[in-house]
Image (cartoon, rainbow, N blue to C red; front, side, top):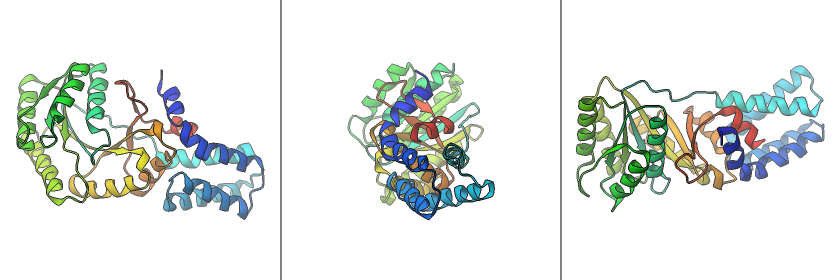
Length: 297
């Protein structure tokens, strides 16, 4: 099943929340102030966010006014264009060798995301090693090892309670000696307001910079789509600590708050690289703006 079909299926709840209402609104063909007020309500109710909603409406209003649009289908097409322009089409596209650190709060699906990322790279013909740097949570490494075995990649693990930075050091040393293309670094799930744990992330970041300066670097944050606007606060805090390059949005198939993708890109200017649309190892898909817009409206 391709991305388009999976993203359409995964966004069904969001489409029920936003798409059907938008379709009814535009079909009326009356583009007055009441129209824009109702459009604002629909967007806000799907976690598009206040700033993003205002910008969408301003852009749509200007395009409609300039072209004096009265045809509902053309107006709806303009909305699609505005949403697509906000999202852009930025891909991760790492060069090799690369080190990808994956961070996020507890329970967002970091471990499964790393397993799925490993699978993606293996399918692209890349060699992968996983650094099991979540040494705080009981059985975290064992859980990650299951995913590593499913993806058929190597994993570097230490005992529970070990220094996470030491795990990363060993994984990088192994990658350099074996010429491995990709190092995927798991990190302990942490609340974004726990300063000591955020400092641990910074330490891992410094070790990577010091030990593998010629590697391409990507810092990803995994977000649970069901948290809606709270996801933006998480990005903000983690971005201060480690400079987030991109986002993996999980559980998109379980929420009506899929509009948060627009808010994240608009407010933070950080792209969504991947979206999770299921539990299977192949259910992490590279984000595609056109398919996403088609999926929600």
